[in-house]
Image (cartoon, rainbow, N blue to C red; front, top):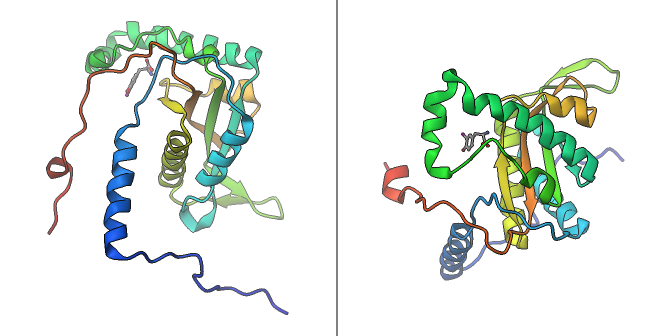
Length: 222
Ligand code: IYR
């Protein structure tokens, strides 16, 4: 029999309206607790937690369902050190260059500096790559659609899943990340999207005193 092209939407759950309101509010309460953390503990995290968060991220919608992402999970101490060394080289230049002065000023309230010890302390660095193009079954180059949107959505879902599981993360993006292709032996169709640093916060972790914009400031109902 030919494979079915469409299936019934059997997994959809319709909740009573009161329950929907509670779910939306509860989810907001959980999400507003999420903070980007730069002070990590070296406490190990069971790999199965990361695996299931990645499975959750992999359910993200993507252009033409091409799923143009690769998640390289680094826990090896030597590889983490290599990533730290390469990243700090980029950061030293970033923080000292005249060309990025305005940008560096805009970051002042975050307290970021060129030194990135979390790249060695945190148990996992998830290097996320965008597949700019793919390959069809016969080895021909295949265009990928809406790559940055797709990878951004999957990354957002990963960040959400990790938070939901009880971990913290840092979206880390040095200005040039091509060194990741070399260190992690990724093919040239893969462009580094970000490093997601994952683990537990250190005991005395501090986060910047910053606010999110209000609903009125970000949304309009027309
Ligand atoms: N990559 C640098 C600079 C930096 C850039 C942005 I945009 C930030 O939100 C935070 C930092 C660093 O991580 O220090």
